[in-house]
Image 1: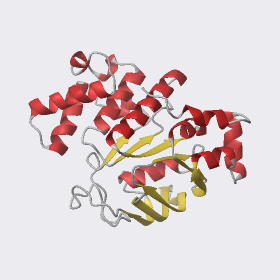
Image 2 (image 1 turned 30 degrees about the horizontal axis):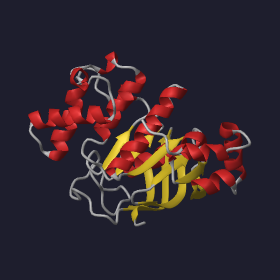
Image 3 (image 1 turned 45 degrees about the vertical axis):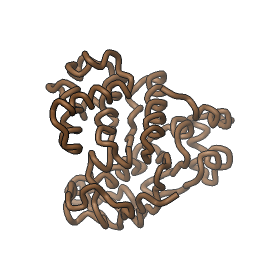
Image 4 (image 1 turned 90 degrees about the vertical axis):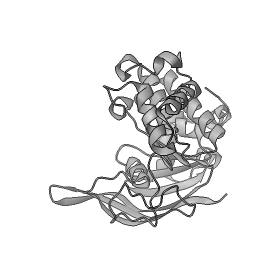
Length: 280
């Protein structure tokens, strides 16, 4: 497969009380077009920082080095949603080229705007459709994420929905403009186990239907193994292991990866590999 983006020697630090605290320490990897890549690690490993760097969402105070290259043409290379100092060969458009699903949909959705309008705004902004057609598209997207009664849901406010339903709306907004890459940053960690499985199955189905590349960020190697083609393991800002899912699960090379497996999957993780075909 062709590399959709190439990350080389990516270093990110945050300034705290005048001191730079390293979050990423020279991470290099390629993300392949059409693949499902999981990036896992404990809290503080740098996985969310990596996701934000790819999306151009790091704060202005971040100190950044290295490069993120995009060999495949972007929709609007002239548009920049990150400061010019960002280490990027060319910057894709967030929302159009990259869809981003955050951990907490309550913070990513506008609490005073109906969810239909929020999705329609994404459609209208990036696909340049009329408001009428944008709302029609929004309804279709709510149907695709299997939100009950999409006609009524268009006029529903986020606080009227459950956590799982809000995350489905957030996913609908993220894929509204048919992005090349979908980044899900701990998108299931705030949900209960049953809803987590439903959201993972939903993401799997949508990625397959649209041919998107998926970057799935999680601390849970069990969820990663059920979804991803490849797994990258981060620890203290360093990439310590990268490989095909079956290799990481069945024959991990690093002691930290083995510890994650034992913590989340128990001693026998192989049965998990058979669950990758579930759908929602």
